[in-house]
Amino acid sequence: SIGEQRFIGPLADAYAENDEFGLAIETARKAVAMLNKNGRATPDTLQPLLDRIKSFEEKKPFRDAT
Image 1 (tube, rainbow, N blue to C red):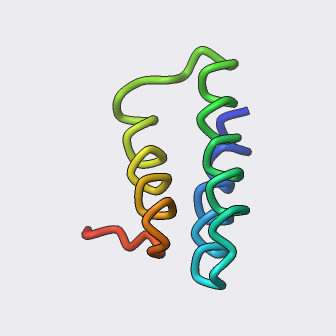
Image 2 (cartoon, rainbow, N blue to C red; image 1 turned 90 degrees about the vertical axis):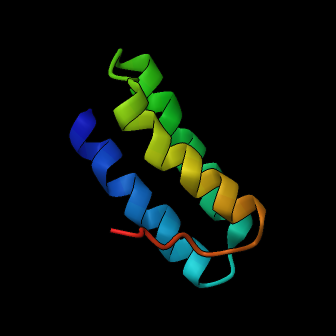
C-alpha cells in the first residue's frame, strides 16, 4: 500500500546512514516496485526514491535539501 511505501524511504535512509548501502538500495528499489505494482508510480512519487538510489550507489547517505 502507499502507506507502506511511505515508510520504506526512511528505512532505506537509515540503512545508508549506517553504511549499509546495499540494503539501502535494495529497500528503495522495493519501494519503487511497490509503487509500480500498485499503479501509483508518478514522477512525483518515483523521483525522490530514484534520487535516493543514486545517492546510495555513490555511497552517500541521502539528505533531502528541503
